[in-house]
Image 1 (cartoon, rainbow, N blue to C red):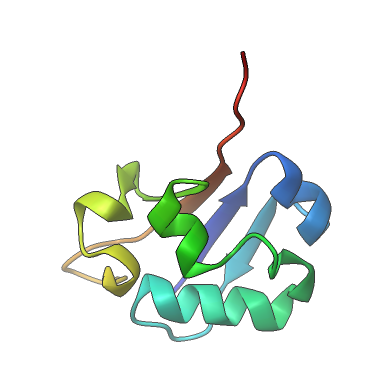
Image 2: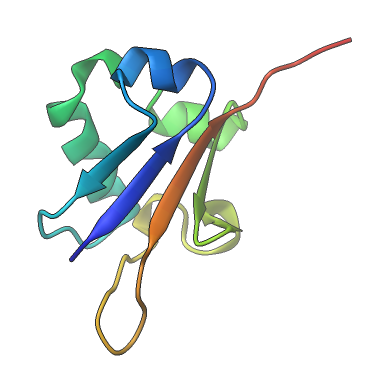
Amino acid sequence: MAIEVRLFGELVRAAGAKEIPIDEPIETVRDLIELLLRKRPNLSSFLSEENVRSGRLIILVNGHSIKMIDGMETRLLSGDVISIERIEILQTVGGG
């Protein structure tokens, strides 16, 4: 399975990259987050389930929020069923 993770905002600085290719076998967004935390431990303050639930972190799979699919259990599939090309992780920033 080939997945491209795109990072934005402070996440780029924390990870040291705008994009992280993932070739390891994973099944869900939760698996992906665990893998990213092993590969890039500096992301640990951002990539928590609480940040996703609270809206401080937005995770999109092919442009669709995981909140509208199955949350952290959103399945990542490749091959004939679904081709996952990228996952975008955005940090929300408040302003006034």
